[in-house]
Length: 141
Image 1 (cartoon, one colour):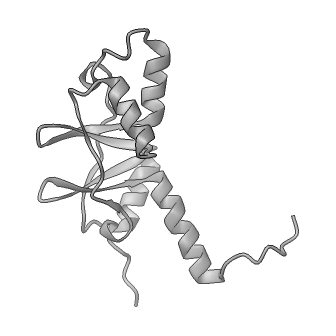
Image 2 (image 1 turned 180 degrees about the vertical axis):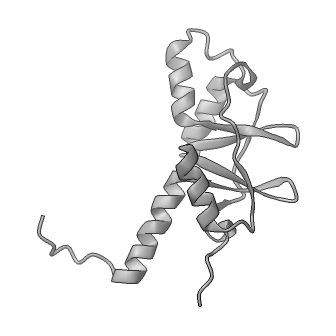
């Protein structure tokens, strides 16, 4: 019988993170530069939460002085933290039940990965292709 994989097998390893004292403008530029949708927020080595590109864009549209505000001045999404050996099924269920966009993956309390809805979609597409083969383009619309 096959075992359900651990989150470590599908997470994005070694994610970028940003310090809570960075400006919102700098965090936005960092997200754009690295084409990221989510960015873990830290204070020194403490993992505080995660900020999304959507959250930053919303804040910048609402605030006229957003370029001077720091991340600590805006609400940061509560963190959902899991150990890298947590079963993928448990993580997916918790994310779905809690309407969560991401999970921060740790090992001994230190950030080692992130798992986002983009990772879910990418891995599900891979699973479908493994099960059914790649689409051949001849399907009727």
